[in-house]
Length: 182
Image 1 (spheres, helix red, strand yellow):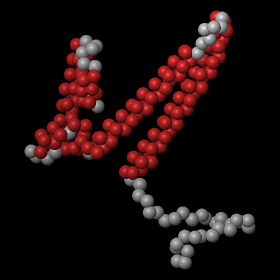
Image 2 (cartoon, helix red, strand yellow):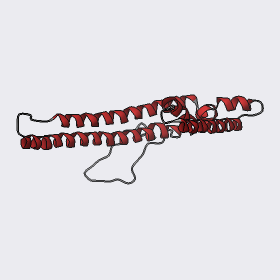
Image 3 (tube, one colour):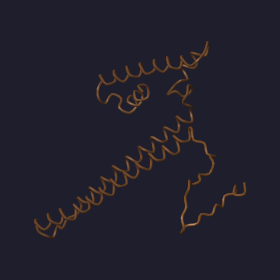
Image 4 (cartoon, one colour):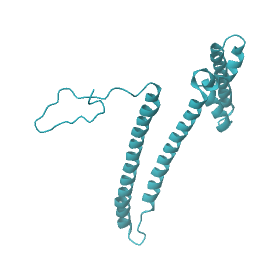
């Protein structure tokens, strides 16, 4: 939790905010590296403790796995792209609303047109963006639950569900399953 953000801060922010922040990044980097090495050394046995400790970046060797690491990086990159497109779409609707004007009309008419039409563009655009963001949150949470969470423990192959005691004079249920004769 300290090592990777400290590396990112050193690479992307650097010394823009001054030397005090650089010292903080280096301290977080050192503490994170020590914790990674100690955590990796706990996993190994005998002489392999040192090798295990050095390979333990982000838990790759211990219990996490390289495939999961790459999958998480791609998943977070996808979420970053979704957030970026939401911000760009909101900015585009703001720019479209700012472009609405009638220069040939008087000040009052121009102001009224800008408030009414610009307000309509802003209301429609931001409601659309909000709706798409809410749907995206729902869809991605559902994807994480069904694909990634259930994939760890769910196994299919259960017996087919049969209703308990349904009877009706209007509806006749015909069982077409292959186990009908058994």
